[in-house]
Length: 183
Image (tube, rainbow, N blue to C red; front, side, top):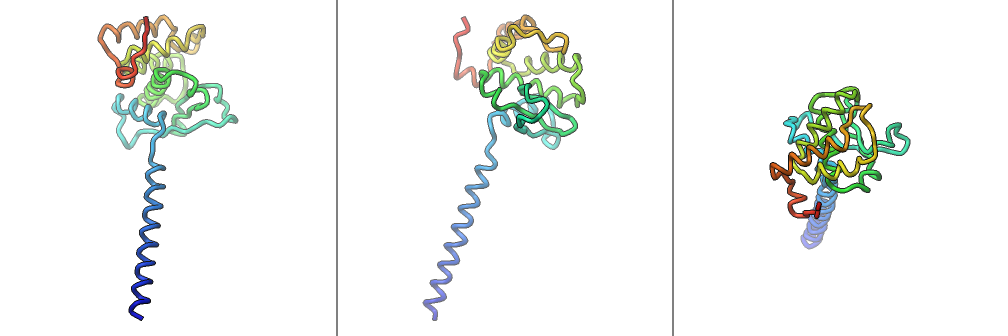
């Protein structure tokens, strides 16, 4: 009988160990941040948004009425919505600039996308990247698009931000290690 109890104890211990290991692995994967969550976290930190007020990043679905946008902040939902399919097609600097732009809306609690809000979000967001290559990549991405009437910066204005950041030798860690030839 003593032998049977020992066997049952070992089986119980193995079951508990297996359960703990299985659930620990699942938990570590569920806590993994996506690239966009990491960029949003970096942007919110750069703008001094307290941890308890930081917002989550949510993937848009095609039925979303704003699906044609790469990303937008919804004060009502208190989330940044992203079109991952669209963002996956642009360079890293564009992604980072877009997420920082959205973080400006969080900083100011923008409830509507007015031209003034969009102009401010572009200007402050692109400068906050502290990277001339990120600013350059968003400028290249916007070439040929005229969104002045909605308040977004024109390519020439973004190029000026990029030039200003370059004069200050501002470059993010990603582009420091993955420097591009911008000649």
